[in-house]
Image (cartoon, rainbow, N blue to C red; front, side):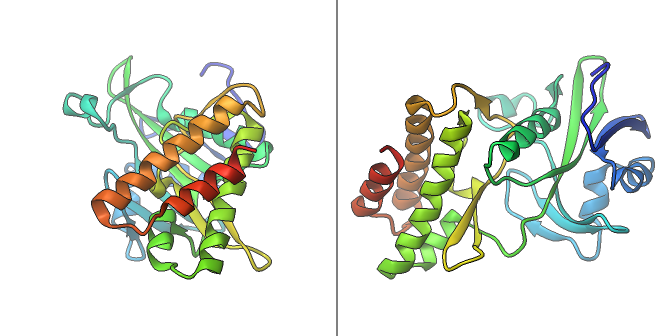
Length: 251
């Protein structure tokens, strides 16, 4: 990260950790990390709200004017987690998430702002890391929304928000290989519709904007998740829902 800089962000070391944080919150993040890890700080706050993930994730208010953030400790999934649950080689997931988030937001894709990421060196190769992202208030993930919405008009409203998100990813040329129901957050829009936001973007990679291959890959990944939730959790998801997504996303 030598020479690495991004406007509106600061890079510094604190308590032996390496930190990149928004300028508005850098002093607050520094004061926390000088004493303990960002994740440990979040976990013990009285107002912390635990969220579901590979490991507990906490929504907390940061001191001062930094506002409310979601703090998570980066964890591995899949077979490799048996050998290394939270150790990563450089660059850490926090760095990748920051770069992907900036690029997605610049392209019109709704995804949370990365407020800070912290890298804790184990040695000169391996790191652990925490990430704080801006909380999107009053949101529910797609699995929760689809389970509750049964009437046709509101279901179409949900699907339309998902279609809009998928199209924005296509426009940005962004392939999200882990696009599952938990990584799509829905909120009330400014009008009568809903807004969809994409989460956990550290594994997103970019190709040609507007690529039909990107559109198909993201849609297929999300549909696999929908089918899995239908088959294992009884999620109400029909062939008509799938046809609607395919028809309106791949045009």
